[in-house]
Length: 178
Image 1 (cartoon, rainbow, N blue to C red):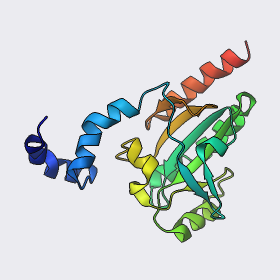
Image 2 (image 1 turned 60 degrees about the horizontal axis):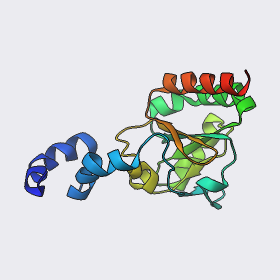
Image 3 (image 1 turned 60 degrees about the vertical axis):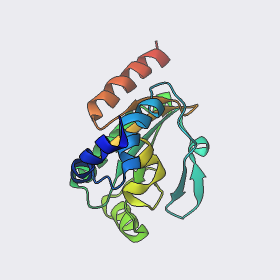
């Protein structure tokens, strides 16, 4: 599609998805489909822990890693906290580890939310809001959202529908414990 045609739709994309550039529109239309493929290895993104220690995807524990994107101001995200704690307990036998990935810009908002809502998981952030590399890579337009990776960081599932994660984890549990 020529850039002139995409330019016509840019104001619409800016309103709907808060996209600011033509390059972001192109990625959502073309690059996303090539990069975000179930079974494909995800790039080794870097994160900060709450102690500002740097880590990356390959250093994270877990046979299965569920990265859940959230923010301190997101009411639906906060409502998912008990579900996430339950998920990790239920599926720990197959090696599931949950990593909440905060998309706040401010470290203080992130830390206050962790303390207030008593998250029990290892917390990560890129401290760059919805402009963080991993958030942009998956072209998320809303939160909460999530990705499930295997031990090799291959994508198993992505998107906001929490029931799909329960279904896939249950299937993986049956495969691991016949």
